Structures are given as structure tokens and as C-alpha cells.
Amino acid sequence: MTASSAELELAAEQTIEAATAAFLWAGQDSYGVLEHVAGASVARMVEAHCAYALFRAARREVPTEDQRAFDEHFRNAVVFGGYEVAALPAPAVPQWAEALRAAMWEAIDDNRDITMRHDDPAVRLRALQVFVRSQGLAMRSYWGRDPLPLNMIDSGAQIVCSQTSLVTSAQF
Image 1 (cartoon, rainbow, N blue to C red):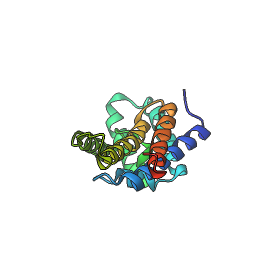
Image 2 (cartoon, rainbow, N blue to C red; image 1 turned 90 degrees about the horizontal axis):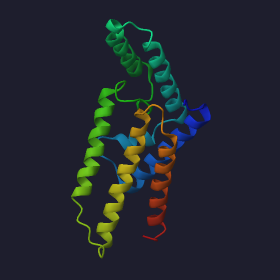
Image 3 (cartoon, rainbow, N blue to C red; image 1 turned 180 degrees about the horizontal axis):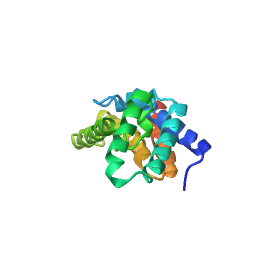
Image 4 (spheres, helix red, strand yellow; image 1 turned 60 degrees about the vertical axis):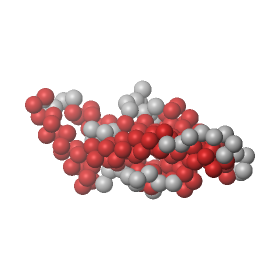
């Protein structure tokens, strides 16, 4: 099932909103992924996602021996055409995908370093910040799937926003 323009716009808005909340509340990852997504444009994310869908459709018509060159042509178009990398899957933007993967592993490692002591509010807060940051990163990773899992993006946005508002309103 292909997402409609309105669904893509909503998914982009939710992804940007969650990345912004995670970045502002939980802090930046070492690779700049959350900051980049927080600064992304809804229109540019939708445009990039649609361009990649067209690229994939056109690629099916390219002879197998020419597909590698065709892929390279698209990667160059991403770099020079200004497509929003936050909305593209790993094959289209390998360096960005590597940064995203590294940021997600960083969040996992941060989580491993936390020793839960339920009586220590600072530890609980740090654990929640790591969780929110990893959820913000995971939402961006969903843009690499086909079809785009709109329900997962919606759920992720609700989780990030509810957790940040919980703590901000001192209900933590």
C-alpha cells in the first residue's frame, strides 16, 4: 500500500516533532541525527520519499548490468539535488544510514550503562532520556522501510511526546 500525500505529510510532521522533542529534552546523539531531523522540512521529506519511490519504479526497467550505475546516479542526485536524507532508506544514502545506525547503537550502549535504582530520580530521569532519544532515532529509521509503517511512526510520536510531557509536568 502506497501512502497518500496527506499520510506522508503527517508522518513527516510526527517524525520531525518527535526528533525535536527528543533533541531538546533528552539531548543530542554524537552523530547529529536528531538535530538534523529536528531541522528537516515536511515538504522536503515528502518530496524525497516520493522521488525515491519514482527511482525504485524506474530501476525495475533498468537492465541488471546497469543497475549499479543507476543507483550511483540517484545517490549523486541526492547529494547535488538537495533531497532530504532523513526521508530516504539506507541504499540511497549510505553515509547517513551509517550515522543513524551508529547513533542507535550509541543509545543502546547508553542504556546498558544505566543501572536502574528505582529510588534514585536522577537515574530514572537518565533512563527515560535515553529511551526517548532511542525512540526518536527509531522513528527516523522507519523511513527506510517499504511500505512506510505509518502506524509505527504514529505510535513512536505518541510515546516520545507523552514521555517528555510527563517529565516536564513533574509527573515523573
